[in-house]
Length: 336
Figure 1 (cartoon, rainbow, N blue to C red):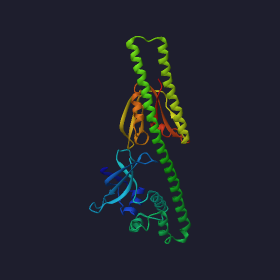
Figure 2: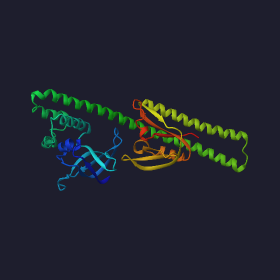
Figure 3: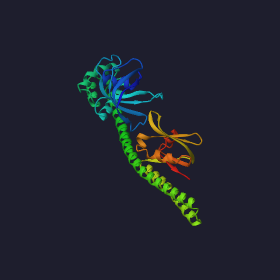
Figure 4: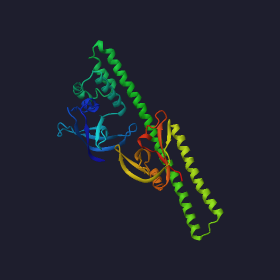
């Protein structure tokens, strides 16, 4: 648990215009840095890898002597400066609050709500009278003019539809995360088996060299074992391609390259990554918290330094190159 972090709250964003006014009774006129105390790191966002979740206590930047307010905060390195920016914040059940966030955003954009109105509604939120999109609509409906009623209902429908679509994507992302966890465990077993095969071959070759008793038949046998090892890598690659297709992804395969360096715990877009460097200077990264929690792929990569390899990256079937073009990788395979 971190003691505290600082997050930037841009003045003209959803967090400052909607979330903070209603849920925390806070609104700032200019871009402001806020402090979060007693931070509990909840990990990266399943749907947006560049975002991070914290449970923390918010200090009111206008009056730090006021009691802090406990909440759930979503942050991102939005400006690529290595510093967190607040995306949104809530205080209750996340799904209910998600619908509420979308309703707040849409109604403000359609000019049925203002930030000043949300600040006035903050006491009702604290009392539990406005803690969902349904209760918000009910609270506002009595004050909507008949001429605007249809537009108001359309605005609410748009917010609900967008929230449902986003939550469906979130559920899919969580399922993919669980699949990635299981894949990491399977990859660890495969890596250990491969290491055992390589060590066995090395010991046998050293014994033959020392005794100077290598015969043509023995060399053929060793060559066959090496060929079997390559075939095993090809089989593992085909299995990965099949798993990717099952998740509506395609395992994009890189061109053959020489791996020259493996670095761990490198920060890329706000996440700790394993970074591969190749002979031509290109780099590829993998977010270890999501795709290599047991560091099995990282360990495998370290054994392949100096060798010709290919990497895979899972891209959505209908978005070719979405992740591979950004320099990410999912697994690594030996060529020779």
